[in-house]
Length: 516
Image (cartoon, rainbow, N blue to C red):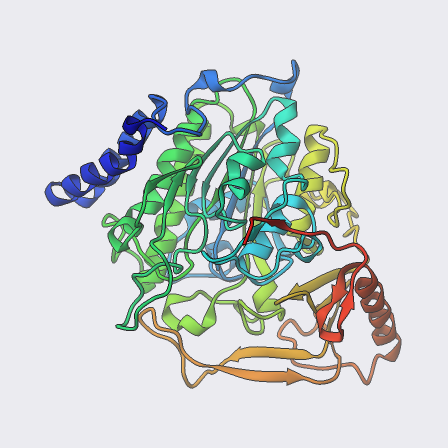
């Protein structure tokens, strides 16, 4: 690499520092981001794709007949955190408008209540443990998404789609795992969670390295600090709007995986103190505004009618952070558990003319279903490797009498622990240890509270249509239902394994690895 290219990250850093010293926060964000655009379009970031329109080539002559796809993924957003799901402390009018002009799912789930695993499921249509992806990957992790797995953008590119991603990746931070190596033409964002950094609260030194910001495969900010995190939300929106604006007549896939409301929370100066819900509410209102910018750009380009917009979350709220966390609104527990509060997430979608406005879908579905559903919509071939999701187009479009196509869903957590099974209205919690929030010691101001370890020693059976809070164990009263769900457990163990009973699954694949 030439000396000129080597100087680029340092040049951006120096320019950014100078701008911070002399300009207001809102102007800094736009000017810094504009400098990234200029440098990228000039081809100065080695190893990345150009952001210009000439960087894309249609692979299909009829690609213009296919819808655009905008997939927005929040981080640690609670089931009850949107206005259309009952929240009143802060306002989410743009996200609510997606439900008003489309559909709201009341029984939608993430496969696991944690970062990397939930993203693997979303983008591959597989239970994450089938891919060897467990929990949350860390800066010291040597594994990531395998090159042989087919991600959603890799299904779409052969059909002429432009593919862009902005936000949190979290499927491996080594170059072979990054978005450009897995079907995305463009990428701007963080490689993992924003709390994996050396700038945490308190005096205890952190073992984390500096948090990098990537454009493509190139690090353009080597140390994302607190001031930088205040700029992230609007910078992500700038990227997303610019990507849509340059799409012109080609179909596009935009994956916007926001960094927030994962802790630590940061908000831009324009939105600080604006909500009635403290910093958490401010963060969500700024996030909602960025969604509004995306929807407005779709209108400006005249492509609203041909664009499917889907919004959901990776898992439930991180309740141990108290006033820096959202709400599960009547569900039990939150992130880090497979109780409903940890895995049931808000989901809204719109596609004018295809999804009836103001619809509500009560059938069960999961993030693993989005890949096969989108593949069916655009006419893409499903991956050659086995996936677990099914096409839920009839549910998405609220066809009369449409039913969930799955007999059973599985919730794994930690390192391949089979912790829960869902079938119809029934939920089986299998024996395992779960960390529950301590209501007497809630977190505050960005510092976590305490958790209480609870051991489930016998299977617990809940009927969710009558007991959404999972408070009435019916295992002794419904022996036939219990026996049926235990048979599903046995089938899952054969295929996917279960580390709780030391069973290896025949259908589990290896993750990608870098040398130790």
